[in-house]
Image (cartoon, rainbow, N blue to C red; front, side, top):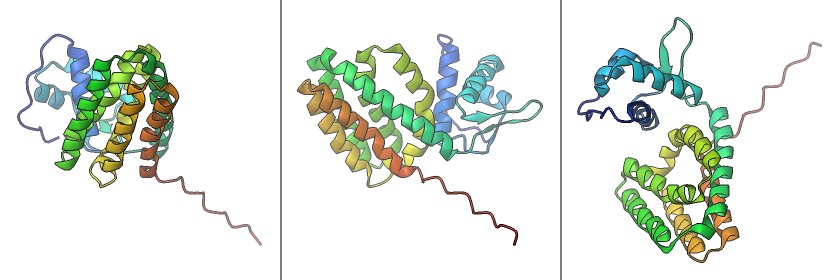
Length: 228
């Protein structure tokens, strides 16, 4: 694996989570490409840590389907499996809708302002064709409702499945269709500011449902020919 230059050293605090998050992000942004063999020694050298947290991180990434490993064989970055993306996307959509519906009544004016500020950063990143910054801003935007809702089950499911969807979502943020997300974010902010839980939940659903356009429909099996 070619080692990317310039990685910052990792502090010992929360080392396991930090290593996991760094590797997860490298898979999502394509630094570690689909099909690429990943070796714990090389990853440990890149991140400046021992092999133990890297191995633990790879096990966790395997549970979410971002890497594949078999006994006695190399660990590789998983190819994008459209069936898995489709399943994960359906759950992510539902979880964000639930989070918003639970959060609206608890949102403060400061929370709504955080959403506005994140969407401004998101729009600026889209305008600058900076996909990485757009994803960060988008995460910050949606995290407000998830955090305020305080539903640990929702947060846990989203932490597990969102990276599966994000690998495909990068394509949207690199396209003209990203402007639609900015407008939907604006509508979500206004619904939250009005404390209209039903409207906000519906906009949250539409915001994430638009990603379905990136997931090709499953192809029907080829018909089998019958013997005459």
